[in-house]
Length: 167
Image 1 (cartoon, rainbow, N blue to C red):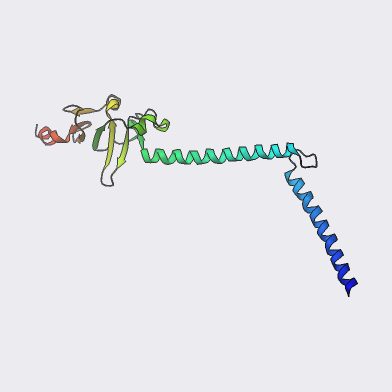
Image 2 (image 1 turned 135 degrees about the vertical axis):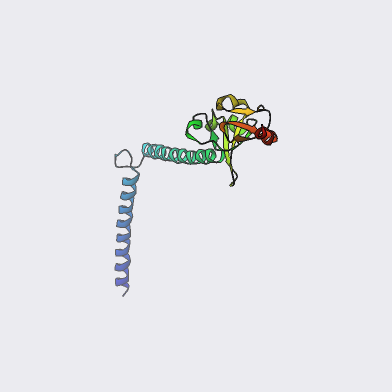
């Protein structure tokens, strides 16, 4: 019986050795990047470069998604949007915020859109009023304006709205 167990153990050892040898060959084939049949420093360098390249791609994709989210949250408005967009009835003149001033994604914006669920609001940067080709009555030194019902390019200060309509 001992002979039988010894043969089984010996046979198992041989099988394990063969399996280890095959596993080593598979690992060497998988990691051998330069095709010389062995695992060496050059293979490690090549694997490192591949990892670096793939990591850069992942970081770039993540950065693109973050930029898209940032633009969506800031919702910048550009002079080119004037022709493509129906302007909202309510306009607010605001100072340029540092989020728009320092963010390269908002470079060239002349304002931003905000939607308070009941009425969209165009926020016009005070330093970009001339880019809108709009008129503000009595001047652009008030904060909130509402569109003139007879002229969609004229915005009337809310403080003067009813007095203006009486005229």
